[in-house]
Length: 325
Image 1 (cartoon, rainbow, N blue to C red):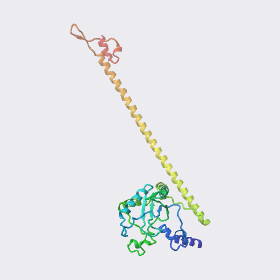
Image 2 (cartoon, rainbow, N blue to C red):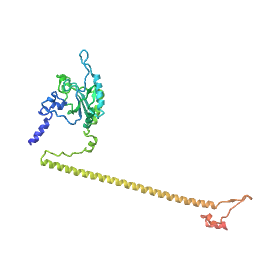
Image 3 (tube, one colour):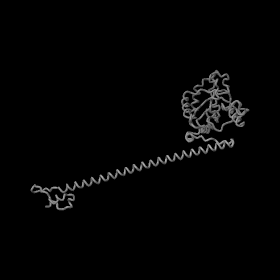
Image 4 (cartoon, rainbow, N blue to C red):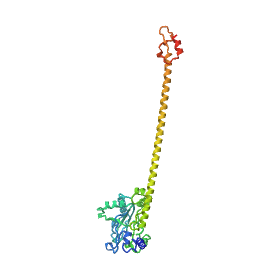
């Protein structure tokens, strides 16, 4: 019980100000003003959805009179260039730029992708590249939710620390990019981090993880749960196969009935054709037996008797005797 309470307490304070081991600022903003000399640990992630481009944005220099130049046009051009390049590697959910003046946050640019695979692809392709004559310093960032590291007072326009505040002072997103980023976030809100196919395959997967550090009772309970889920999966697979086999059998029976019906219709047509041929033969025989012969000298006509029975096989016997006799 004591170990369980201690584990819950460590999980609760992990990455917060109460954590005496890990740096809370590094978890919130992906950077620390103490750098490598910080007394707390900076746990750099091996994979993440967010990339940090350190000191990437450089505002225009001040004017000749020392006054700050309005960088609205310069910022929009920079934002368009970065967004256009990043969408080549995947769906960009967020692209934010710091306007803090601290050495550890000046010009930092955060790019959050929809999946970790897309962020990894972007990280590989950005290595060794240059922008405006400066090399791109890209690395994974532990920041996935920028609301934790944002300065609330800056959003309300009353931050007393100014540009040297240790929390994020984020520049506003240009209007032309808001619709694209909003649409991307909505499209990937319910998307699984390992991809859509994985999500479809494991949508109803509720298999518990094996308690490596648990006691024997927890392990037995986990194994019993596994056996139950495995049995349910086998039953579901068997039902699916039976349903598929029944559907295939019905399809074959329907095809057989259609084939038999087609053959019966063909036989009926053949019988009808033979009967028509017999009737036509009888009619032609009667017409041949009743032909007349016209005499060329007297202009008269008389019936030419036919004595050969083979010439009129379908003639009435009584008519044949009358003609012969």
